[in-house]
Length: 345
Image 1 (cartoon, rainbow, N blue to C red):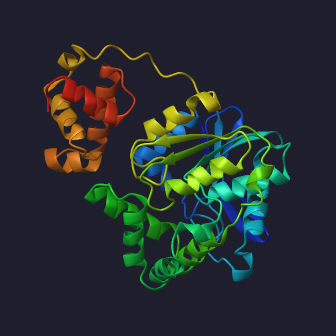
Image 2 (image 1 turned 135 degrees about the horizontal axis):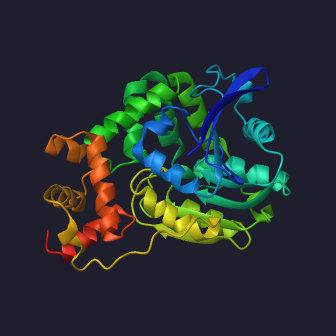
């Protein structure tokens, strides 16, 4: 699968972007902090992007202040208007035609603003973990305390945000996610961009969205509660809301396969392979695969299973992929159910 990384000039600064796949462009407007090369190292992130890239050329970028883009972010640029201008510059650099947008978290606000102002450039819109007004994401004191913690103690702040973004994540993955956040931004930029997240307000723009829109939200999301996703779906004319199980705020955490299943029809992704009957399928698993399946059913992450069985995370990831292939399943939760029906747990 073709991957490219590049840079463009915007407002006298450098913006890093990356693409994967071929076909019509699907853009992921910048979320809080990102890193276009470090992101790809995560199995969940790679699974999610490769699923989208089965039909699209997936475009993402590091907003100024994060990742491989220039890290200095002047205070006067901390506005929604600047975010939309940055998004427009990236799109104009990569594509002249119509694009599909997949807005994640605060990236949903940028997506909505761009789509309303450029109705001929966007054909459809997915809003995942999105919201209409950042002030409604938590009490003012709580928002200010979290921003202050990120600015003053980035190590503690990044760990606190793991609790918010992925409360069910296993211990090794939690450490890795915290370290990733710190590598993606300085404490100052992270705090500034988190504060900006809370300042976004697209309540007046959402009713003006005139393209097909799918709103996807996890029921237990702590960063952006489900009520925020329901408000978005209610404000966008004709939008459809899909609620998923789980508490992961980002679509590649938890079960990226579940996220892909939720958007596949709307985005026209290739159909998944037919699922074979599970009865007797467990018999086709090796002894090690059965052992891994039992631990998957117990809710353990690949990293946790690797530590338990003294294997590399890559080996565990391969075992899990083989299990799902043999059982004809696309999610870890479905694999856990198959283990229960087979009497393994």
